[in-house]
Amino acid sequence: MFSGSPDTFPRLVGDIGGTNARFALITAPGREIAAMRTLPCADFAGPAEAIEHYLAENALPRPRWCAFGIANPVDGDFVKMTNHDWAFSINALRERLGLEHLQVINDFTALAMSLPALAEADVVQIGGGEPVAQRAIGLLGAGTGLGVSGLIPCGGDYVPLDGEGGHVTLAASNSHEAALIAWLATRYPHVSAERVLSGPGLVALYEAEAAVAGHTAEPLSAAEISRRALARSSLLCVATVDTFCALLGTIAANLALVLGARGGIYIGGGIVPKLGAFFARSGFRERFEHKGRFSEYLASIPTYVIHAPYPGLLGAARVLERAAGRS
Image 1 (cartoon, rainbow, N blue to C red):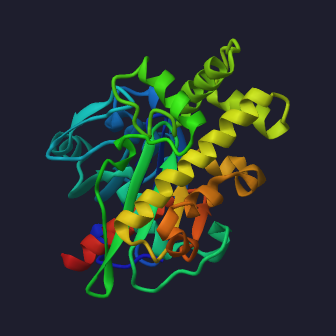
Image 2 (cartoon, helix red, strand yellow; image 1 turned 180 degrees about the vertical axis):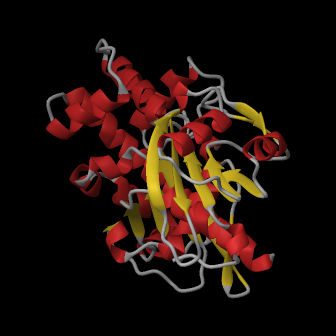
């Protein structure tokens, strides 16, 4: 439950990705997050229109405070989304909605804020390892893009990271991956991790797998590639998702080493949680631990898949809770 001055309620929280926008309301002190809804971003001209629709459709009271994560860097007042066409001024949005307080942060910064509040049932551990208290925690997740963040311990609490680690250069760990990346490099000026570890990236990876194998790629969506892989009805789709999981292991391990993430690595986003047992059996964890002299170090770090339904909303709510405590 959430606390603070009644003057800061109702509190609107949101999680805006490249495809969907999720909203919820905390109506008063002591209340939980409620009225959670998901809206397609393509149906609205911008966040103001989506929020007004959400409030009107559900006959909700006007919020006083609001925080939402958005799949984009947030640096200053103007926000222009990377994977969608929304662009807006934070101050103008606050004034239009009549808000007393508005915080707009990167969506994975918000998701990182949720990690200490997740219940045991909200995550599934992949492989071994045990978390170390008060050590850094890493976070990444594939959806419309590849989000990367983390939590750094500071004075008995955590500070969330606000970065764009999904755009680091993708590296190969074997000759097959090198061939895939070489083919992708003929199509993209920079083969970043997000170019492969995302929804659009899964399609690009499928096309690369087909080209390297000498096959003709069918025009498949990311969802259909995943479906065929899980059903094992297409060897090419199975190979694509296998490679996807292994490359995610590479990036997750790199993040763990950069942060010294002895508190664990968490995986969110829309793709991996839907892979279920396929992901657990994949080469993800083996690749995560495959780091030569630091293999033993990485083997001690636990990795978790987030299965909570709205963790980004929880993170945004905790951002407002922290702000209310300072006011």
